[in-house]
Image (cartoon, rainbow, N blue to C red; front, side, top):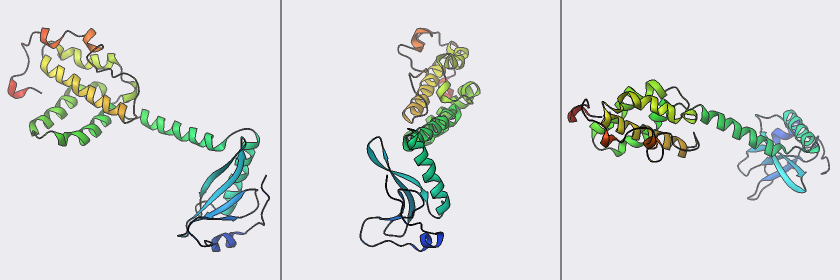
Length: 229
């Protein structure tokens, strides 16, 4: 265990400066073994706890000064040391908590939100203004009423079928294009880390087994070419 340095006070910490050179300075502040103030060459100050975990040396960040005061840094250092003594890795614990928070945030992205983000990123690729309009229009008219408020991570094949079934036979061309657009939005959501697993709007080996092929469906009732989406 590192020795406990002479305890510095709040004024000492406030007045502390970089020792010179290119690297960061490490100033032991005392009160808790291994607690340092790390000072960058440009004067930035952060708290670091040096401790041994599992036979290796680790540096645990405890926040920046003055947001984290000297007293708070000592409290955090004591808490971290207590966890280490109980066999808990505070760094791994913090990483897991951040991952869980990020996963929770990703799960909260709705299909409507994903659709907007996808279109914001992709629509510039369409030179034809009509195509840009059709993309938005089909999603807003047919997909969002069913899928809009659902988290993308929870959308299933049955959800996609609920969108497509009502228009598959009488507006087949529109429905087929809509399916591809839903697939594109969900693919973007997967690549962006907002969902995992197979794409429920995929045709081959998926919806192909549940819906008749567009080429086999009567086209009567589809919109005229000038109005097709």
